[in-house]
Amino acid sequence: MTNRKEIPEGVTLIDHPLIQHKLTHMRKKDTHSINFRQLLREISQLLGYEVTRNLPLTNVDIETPVAKCISPILEGPNICIFSILRAGEGLSQGLLDLIPSARVGHVGLYRDPKNLQAVEYYFKAPSDLEARFCLVVDPMLATGNSAISAIDQIKRAGAKDLRFLCLLAAPEGLKALRKAHPDVHIYTAAIDDRLNEKSYIVPGLGDAGDRIFGTQ
Ligand code: URA
Image: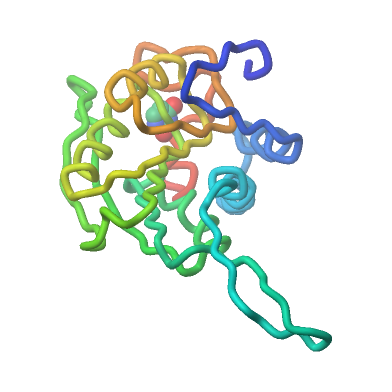
């Protein structure tokens, strides 16, 4: 899968060995939702480490037990994690472990089973999105319809600096999202082979929401 795929422009594949190992366990159909959730939380922290790599820092004066010095901290509480409901919740929890001061926005979307288009049912975001780095998260980038629609709404609400983070991406979803929002960099832990006739990612891991919440 991942290793042989060409990585499109604007996409970063975060294929650290720990992530690949945990992802393999998540893919297995017999992995229980308790373990699935825990693995997703661990992976999201590892992914979050890479996605936030170039966040701006500012220097502050501090005093250690030994001496005064100037030391870097993150430049302000300016991150907003946007969880695309409901599977996005599985990624946002681990990211909040890593960045506890982040604000959290929610975009509620479901896939219309007839035409597979994203239908919005909920949107809630902090009011000062212009000043924030917005990280939009959904474990599965399949057709790209949900991600495109969520990012449309987040931009309409004022966001200017966005990145998209998923666990698995289908080539079709990467292409569609890059076309619709070329300014939004995509981070993924794997690029799978294709979508099937029901728009599930192959080989994928099944329905991420069902596997996180045990609703199969
Ligand atoms: N959403 C999922 O949860 N799984 C897929 O394979 C595609 C979309």
